[in-house]
Image (cartoon, rainbow, N blue to C red; front, side, top):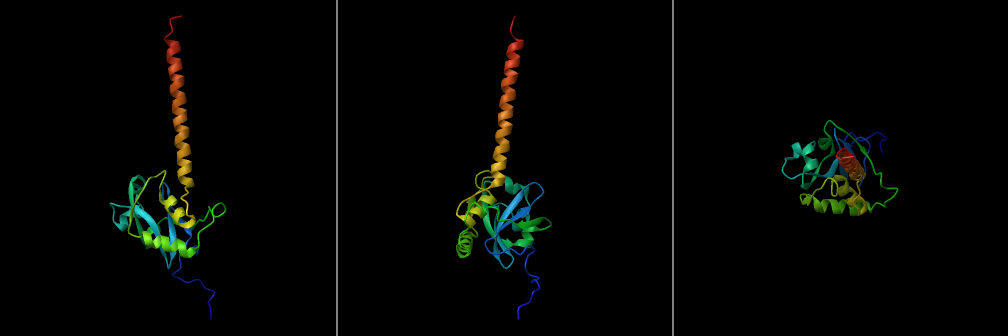
Length: 169
């Protein structure tokens, strides 16, 4: 007879294999993919042990990462998380079997990491959809572009202002 009570070993939010997990760090969001039985796959810095890698801001600035299978509750630590398959409306998820098989094949491998072009969100969305997507990176690129454009505008205005002050008439 099936019980209607939740299994105490199941993580909150009831993630299913292949789900994207968004972990809320103090300064950024970390992304993982749920494998099942409380385990996730995620990217961690190459030069840190498992415990230190879980919440390290250093991970954001690394150029290489290691694909690790870890317990969701250990990776989350004192932070919060949610299941967030936010791209499902625009991208068709691959079959769960394929997602998990691809993920398991990568465990222990060292991969390139780039905050804007190949980050943890790109990694897990590549596994789920076959295409790496990162709204977080797109927002960061937009902010960088805006700051660069503003700095250029102020620079040009300063140059014009300086030239007009240096005119002899």
